[in-house]
Length: 156
Image 1 (cartoon, rainbow, N blue to C red):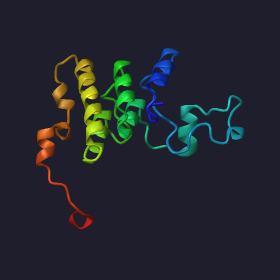
Image 2: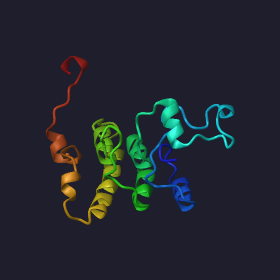
Image 3: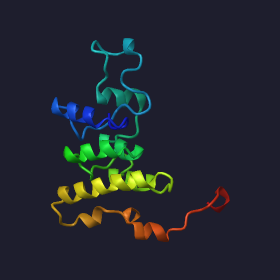
Image 4: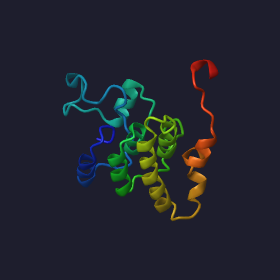
């Protein structure tokens, strides 16, 4: 639901017991593919999915919402108390995922809005003390303005 920007579905899932910080085990393949091969209820557990498909992401719904720049899903997950400090298997927080995706000038505005929600949630999650140490320089517009990005592949 987060990767598809469905905030009402996210709220409904959490209201019936879904873990707002649950790790995604459906990357690339999905748990409903080829249901005839699965257990009787047609769904593999997270652990079974990870083992069967060698999944490497282990991102939360908040990571996915931030990855795609889904403003409403990001806001909803933050309102529901999702942790912005949870690190995926690559040791990236949702803040870092969003900050890196924000580097593309064409999509920067929506990622900036997501970062606003993440910052507010970070301040809540840390109790307002020491939140700055979790806020990468890449999130700051003044820092970003001073970074020179290559204009073409030869400059990389």
